[in-house]
Image (cartoon, rainbow, N blue to C red; front, side, top):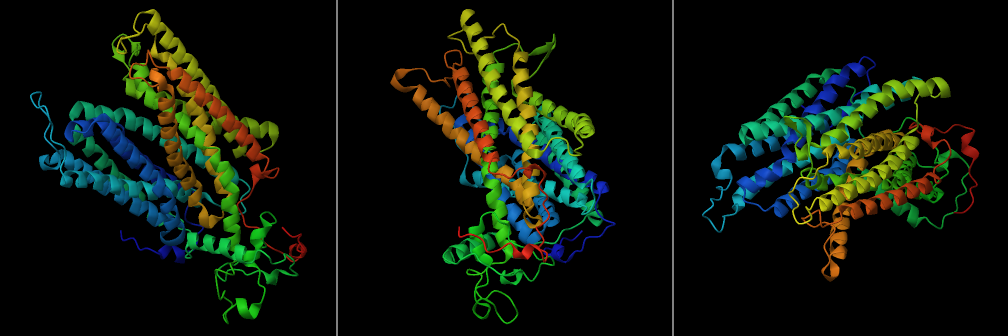
Length: 583
């Protein structure tokens, strides 16, 4: 099948296309991609240490930078999808990029010349990887990062495009249910990745362990392209989004002394490509100056277009800028959620010192306790969508159940509880270790079941499910259709920022707690360190973030939970609201 860039701008919505029948193709595409990606990344530190003679610190730093790069590219992928390629092409090309990256990584395990020789016990100095070997390895990371940058923000919104039905009173409920089930599928995919793929790598080696993700990427590409004739391919905004938003800011600044006193809707400049005439919203009114026509002869060309887009922007572009500004405060409230997720970097240190048996002859690997978060996340989404929403609809009359803002609030409250419980549990574990005489032996097993950690992981899974799905849906409702990929991209970029915040926090706490010769809270000997203190810090910061969230909510109008993404279409009566006060 041949993909042609730019064709989506010419595609008209066909009522015979889209709908629930497209969901298997879209969700399976993302599921296969996530299993392949996360399955390759989770155990990668062992591969780098074994076949590239890297230290744990160096390997961890490289993987961290790779993850941040992948998350940061999501905003680039969203812009390219919304402005140029369209979401169909973005997902298709992104999946192909990921496939190429997986093939290169697989080849490094197949061709001995692409890796270094393992060090023998007689060697005092091990040879590091050559520049060529690192170039091949990093090219794999670059391709997979580019692929993730396109797929992650665009896949979920491409699915929403298939279900968007204007005029359908049940449309909002369908979209909300889709977000829930889509996110549940990602949880199941991640669970498979951290269990099945890791087991294959440990049991059968890296050649098969990296070969399976390659096969999964072939299935991902094939599944998505097979459904191509059924997809609705939404028109793209051919104007450069970032440039357009910058022009709106510059135009508003240049005309900051202009009075906001218009007499009719014709005094606003509208994009000639729009079929519906919008009137500027009344919030952030100072930005309305950017779309005011002061002198038609000077501001407009003969064909009606703006003579200088840095001095006059369309109402549609100004409203897009306002929509982006509106979501920034709420976006910032989600950073702490991802910081809290960083506790899993310490979970291996904790659980490996405890009894991990659930049956006499079956022991859960210390690195697999993430599974309990994913199980709780999936169960919560299914429970909410299948049981809680129908009950709430019956007694409240609201078809959507809990609003996105309410779900975000629940997620933040539960994350505070999870961090507090983490601190309490670690304090109990540490105290038991000291009482049993293991203070100087961090590898000794404590007479305590690792199942004590399951409740805190379950709470964090519920918090993640409630907050993340609610936040994406909230962004989706506020951003215009031409920017809908931003709804998912903003969450992904927020995760990258959270990773940076978490790294700075750990480094700062490690430095402060180890001053004057004291033992660091993050000592390699966790029985002498104080991870419980760090968890209390996270619990306190989570509580402050919850307060920040409540303050941010006051800046949104009452009923913003139910906001409709449809543009504010002007009519004859609405055009006389002007004579606005100076702002």
